[in-house]
Image (cartoon, rainbow, N blue to C red; front, top):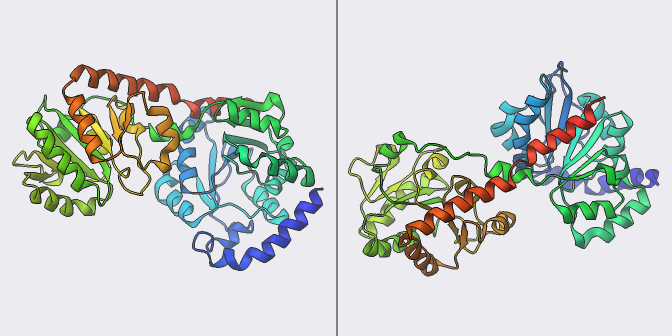
Length: 422
């Protein structure tokens, strides 16, 4: 049965190779994708184990990233090799994650030869796959070399259960060669058990994605940033974070209406792309609002201030009375709503949260409020600002909710330590 899969994978590769060679997501890194790594691309072995973590794309690598720190603590001297399949994932890994790992490489194609060469080159003690990255040749090559194989953030679509069973019946079940299944929830655990995973290797540990989204812990209010924004202690502040083109005009309109009832309210707009700051300043002036820039210290103390710097939004959230997260009034599909919630702030967001559905499911009714449009946003904000005690209780609920869903990374690492212990 395995021979059938090996032959089929080479045949499929031959058919798809022209597409893979030209497609923007997969056209680079051919040598590494075939399992060949040049000198210097992989670090030498250290005193600790070699841990190979694989995520298909940029988002998957970010979901793995909260485990880097706990892995370093649990396995001193370990070597972490991060692999991905897409060009965007590779570039993001090199630019944002490289300082936390020892190497970022392209994963091998799931071919018999490429996977065996990659395993020999990397020499992992543990291979960590993510979500549904079940690659039979890679799993076989790793387990055949004595490598432990784990799945994290495990998920299997109920709609595809029948297809998985059929495939596994034809090629042999690769799940039986894996050592650890760290599943996102009870339903996922039941599905992987139904596909033949040994029960004693299946655990529910949660989703490390939530650890990544809620990474910024609540802390003291940042007096230096408060001053740079032109805010005063005691100001009530509405922060609109990660906004996109087409949203600010509506938000500024809502703010003008709120000022009639709450003249003390200040607005901080943090665009997702800071090069749009001038555009937001112009929109505010068109609506008759005074506006300043954080980069200039907002010297006039304008009611509206644009956070036109990189890396300060998380700190700014600590100064908020309440938060709206952008990308949700457009087809962008939303932005991170768990980060401000983890800071203990009530969080509002629009109807388009397609990229963060799981976060919405967690937060709605627990410190998060989804609104339909700008009019709905105005009504909810007006009501909340009139009830300070409700704002406080919603913020506390949001913080507690994020605390309850966090910690999957640490739980995963402890399970990995168990399978790596002789």
